[in-house]
Length: 183
Image 1 (cartoon, rainbow, N blue to C red):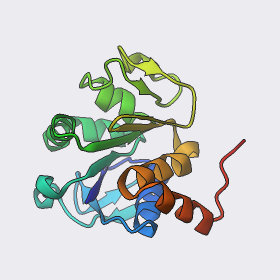
Image 2: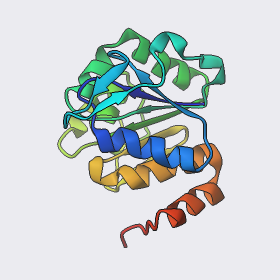
Image 3: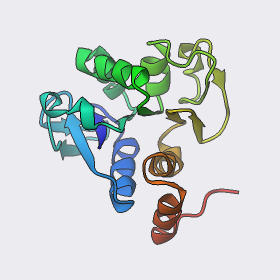
Image 4: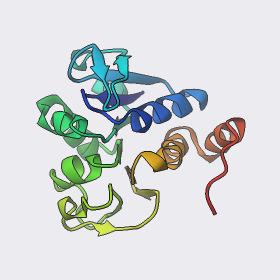
């Protein structure tokens, strides 16, 4: 199970592109409304979450996804449930996907990027202390997958698909949506 955490002010493309592509790849995905059942994105798009935090089953969890956006990332970071779940994933060898501000604010703030390669929104690198900051759209380092920003949502989502469903599934999804990575 992949859980995508949504909090008011989330970046829509960074949350919904992974949901869409992971589901196309055959992954079981549920959106989790951290700030309520209906969560409003940074651009005013309301999304009805599949479940609320108390319905998350950590035993069946393969991955969590933390979209960026402001103030969405701050709302995620303020949630004790989110921070406990991120730490659970880190401690139990589960995948953590974070994009835009989330790698810096949440993962960097929890010191989970120590000596790892990672990327975040340009200008927020100071929050990723002890990380090896790379300059690419998406970065996979073990079980932590980070993405740069909204413009990297496709690359990020396909990296999540590869992690959960395998490279062949990710390639099939990319082909089915006519996606060709920038050269």
